[in-house]
View 1 (cartoon, one colour):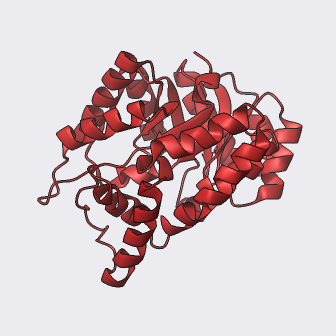
View 2 (cartoon, helix red, strand yellow; view 1 turned 90 degrees about the vertical axis):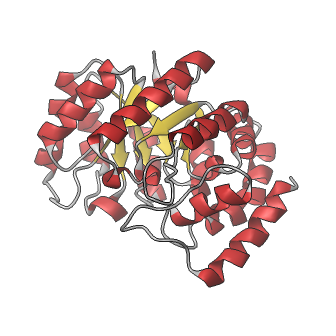
Length: 295
């Protein structure tokens, strides 16, 4: 298994809740079927979009099992989010996800603690040495408070299992530096809105929020870009830009879960501290989704 199987579109899956805030596992299975039918290249369970910090250990394990079962049956690889701000817990999560059949592990930079670069190296080294599954480093400074700079990323890339980075730093210059200076590292966009420019520079795909709602539209775009049909990919990207922006009119995953309900999928309720979208934004989102439903 190499990270090449995640080239293209990997969906950062939402977690649908019932009105009593229990996990809607049947709805989750239906969402997985829609993703697979939509042609996505990979499935990410327990990412930011999945409201993972609000899930119990038992719920996380069940979601991994369901996703791996669906993935293996369909041939779609599964990435599991395992990162925390506690190295010991992250190692334990990584070993468990590996045992449950994960094809790759998404490990976020330790958040809140704001470790030094040396601390980041020690954290990822501990995870690397505990597993034999490919690791995707998740760089999202806006949520963690700590950016992984190119120099540190070069050192992380020397670890035996580190094969990719999900880049959501918001710094396109840094992303270009990583692609140029670490050619053997797979770079995936962590932001739908920069997928086309990143792939044109050598990135290999996106871990997408928007594909929860319209998997085929996003996967068709990344397929064109992987085929180096940049004109088609660029035109599709421009067409999808209002969707990419609209799904972040409020904090993720509020809009995407609301939008899923608008297309007949299982967005479900939210689990506190996440709350429903503001009433005045819902008509704006509805108009946007209605447009893309006709595409």
